[in-house]
Image 1 (cartoon, rainbow, N blue to C red):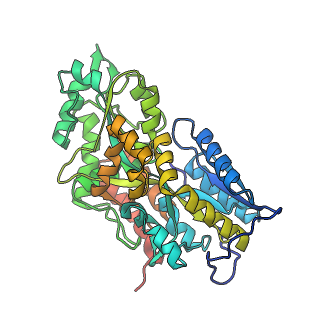
Image 2: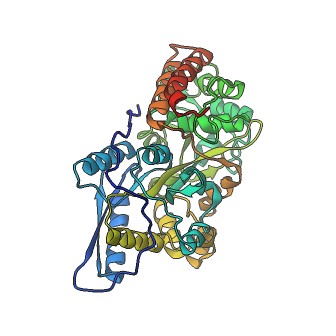
Image 3: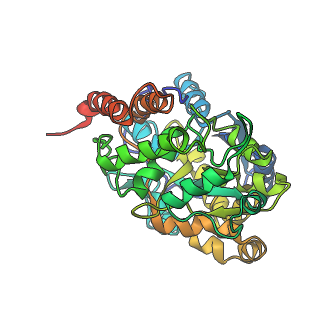
Length: 430
């Protein structure tokens, strides 16, 4: 279950700061830049990042760049704030795109759109990935390891169940029907579930996909209101619960986020919903042919964006800000963004990255890599509000109750709405 991650630190920096600094001269003295990086998915991500750090350092010997691997996103936020509180915080951190409100409200981070050059650079990212990092007409987060939720399915299991292995379910009705056919039992024991949708860690994110597909929204554009009792949200949670209670094709209770890809790879689940950030892990380790598809539609298709943005902390010195910005522009360049997407499965965050030969060759040999990019046409910003950690915790707690059968979807969401109203009331103006 997602832990409450309320950011408590108020910045000690004074005045407005900018990132438009003179270029660092190449000299014997290096500028040190440390960034915290979460390890939240499968695959050799730390080794990939070690290679990025080594490449940048070789090209920029005047900058001493260091990556600190800080565990989950929750761990990374907690460690970054704790270190900053003790005066030893990082200059950069990759944190959830949804942490923006908390970081800005607590005056911890710097905006990136200070110069015309910066704005031109930021204009090169997919708009869907920029949405969560923009608050009060400023840009606070730079898209890096970004994703949408996709459907992974086992083509051999489809054949065994008499389904077309090249046709993923396109609607909620098909999705439930396919899941029933794909569920395999030996007596009373289920040996393969038709579908698994993880309900731990990021349950609000998975539910948001269904809410979008049902034609609803979960929050206001300014992060001060939520719509948990909206009929679209109630119907979305009911559908998720029904996959187990009605269709008996989904494990009862709460499916773990971390073990879901392994269940898929080991044949215990025929279909799963998960981040495209696991694409390379599944591609590398699957012993069977698999498909990747957009999530099924109800009234429409839909998935929230997800993943992490780079944030720059106000505690960075002027030289560190300049060095950090140089690294960010380097690591998000078209070729680097393409290489990161190929290596990890995350969506390359810029359209021009998809025009590189690296990405063209990759997609030609592995067309599934383009599914998450194409799904951006139907994407919505990930759920984010002021005091986001407490609001999502309140929602996740109630989703747990509904998935465990302790409350109806209507009752659970009504309680989540009431809790969110209390939390968000101080942030409303007028």
